[in-house]
Length: 259
Image: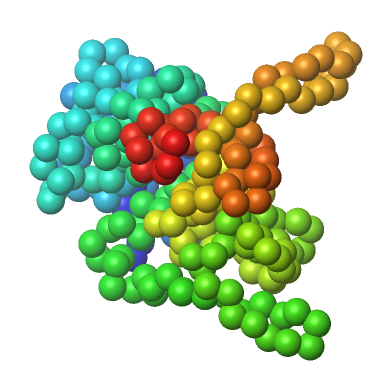
């Protein structure tokens, strides 16, 4: 289905940027932008009259916050739009998922990241469920002269590398020719994005650890603190991007993945 989208942000430049991003991804994510609102009160009125399917919602606004607005939506889930938070603050992610947010994006938002979030939301819309195919139970992979089936439940992570995606199990690594974005959309119930080039099975996350990486800029080289996912069974580490860290942290705290 083609979703109806409402933008809610008290800053006009932020609304302009979201409009431009939506325009940029319209080919991959068809949608109808039904309106904008600059406050929670205006958003409530707009939702009542415009009936959007998805709300792109800021957290910090004058008056009621985006979290308070989403909490009101969550009290009437049968009539409420789906919420994607878009904010400059990473420390509200846990509260965002507690009020049933679909995703939590940090500003400045990239077009690809917004497209991913919208794809996830569309799959949850009642009219979109019928048209969405069921997730596969296995992958077909080629190894030398053999064609093998790898059950999805055995996959630890999927990592984009050049034109291919590496499919990693506890014992082997295979190359498949598929889009990481389409895999994320299909397997979102069991995999979570940790970086722009990697999806990890929720059951494979053994924990997280701090790490430092060298960062080179015009001001010289310095060390930055970051986080890494500990992939269980193979004891491998995968970097967590700054944009995805609030999502991973919220999932760990909420118990949706093993801690």
